[in-house]
Image (tube, rainbow, N blue to C red):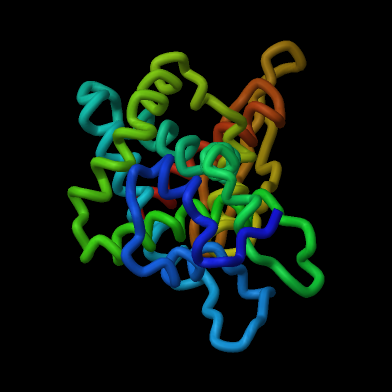
Length: 230
């Protein structure tokens, strides 16, 4: 289903509990750059703003609800709740996959596109509301705070660090980290593997009882490093 008309966004507005004053900004949030039509803008700049907003809302929930959590644990939670998988799930619930406009060779609406539209949507609400940050935060928390807290308490955020790191670097820079076995020490029964994970100018050494464990450890360290410095 394509809901390209400005009058066909009732479902999104109903779920949000917010009616757009300027529906063209909502249409922009749901238009991929591959879709070209005279006078139509795409969601790229809105996604850039929305990424920061969603990050803020998620971190604010985690910081408030888990005040005793260590920085590394908070970083791991955050990585899951801003991942393409999680945001894509929320986007599908809003039926954004039915509304987003794509064209050219991008006939298939990828998970990445759907997750991007979710972020662009929050930028659209923010701008349409007159940049009322607290108002937009309240909408987000009303919809998702309880779920985020519940999933965090159930440890559903614990995932494959290599996957999490790759999602993070691809989303921000369209690049992937690399891994290199540095050394293996110890005897046959108690080997210790050291793996270096590299991304741009960042490097982290992970340690494990096998190469896989060492790769996971290095990915975890590099992900935390990137999140603290970006």
